[in-house]
Image 1 (cartoon, one colour):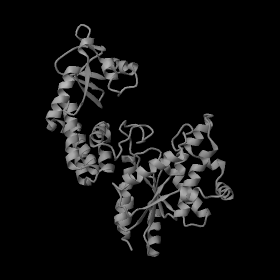
Image 2 (tube, helix red, strand yellow; image 1 turned 90 degrees about the vertical axis):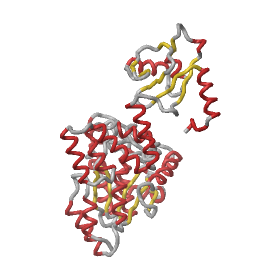
Image 3 (cartoon, helix red, strand yellow; image 1 turned 30 degrees about the vertical axis):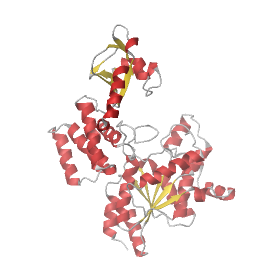
Image 4 (cartoon, one colour; image 1 turned 180 degrees about the vertical axis):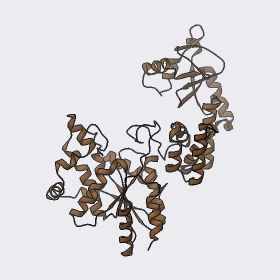
Length: 422
């Protein structure tokens, strides 16, 4: 029913280094003899509303295998998500309510279809996990010892450092493994941080008389901080449903040493072209910023139209290279009669934007040199009034600053000339 060699090639393309190639080939040949497609499982816990580029690494690969005729099973962890995956965590995770998980799950499915075909089999593990009886749960727990659970690095480290481990956290890998029993998965995809969870599925399948799945690990994608894996909880992620401008700007924030990896894992750029990019970066013949802009275009255009991508790039160039404010930047105003010796209180004006939590937050930004007026860093909260004032806070916020009277004139002009709003 499928091309064995092509399937093996796509399975092994760009995967992590801990995969057993011989076992993968054996599983593919075994399923081919049964004259059926592979059941390929990939789990997503809806711990936050957005699917990000880290998830997309596996989803894009699954799409390739789907095109070869294989059955893709996306498991939405609406039940396991209420516990939260303890992988890599140094403390007990906050549990989500059922309503929070379900709301997140709905957005997951919508966003997922931006990457993978709508003929994908989407399953919710609450459909079977919530129906397990207590005797069935005891049977499941009896398959694994506490010593085995403590082989996990995160559990082991917390135990040694006398950090609490809640009993319900032990249930997470067991429940995820039971998903593989129900789905009769032949192959399970997971990040390299999911090694323990995915291998648990193989062992539990065997205990329940199901042919054990093969584990296939995809590389982890570091977030825009360049340190930790891309994660919604860490805030270092690029959501596939984010506005084109935000997506473009976030890509431009990644460290230069991740440019090639993002090309490899997040785009459809041909390997030969990626090789050329690698050579250019190594030879210092090109400014990494220019290559990164090409990367930002590739990624943004994958999830947005060419027009929105072009607008995002124009917006980025205007703000970060030309240091000018586009016409649609928010306007902040001050009252002329409240000026003291012609000076504007920047703290008060920025607080009026609603974009900051407190005056002290703004003062800290001033002290750290994160606020610029017309492209020049300022460190005082009082600045002299000027005719044209562009206020930039960090890399993500920009305002046109003017008097309340001028703001009124701007608003009136836009009403009279709707073209200015474009």
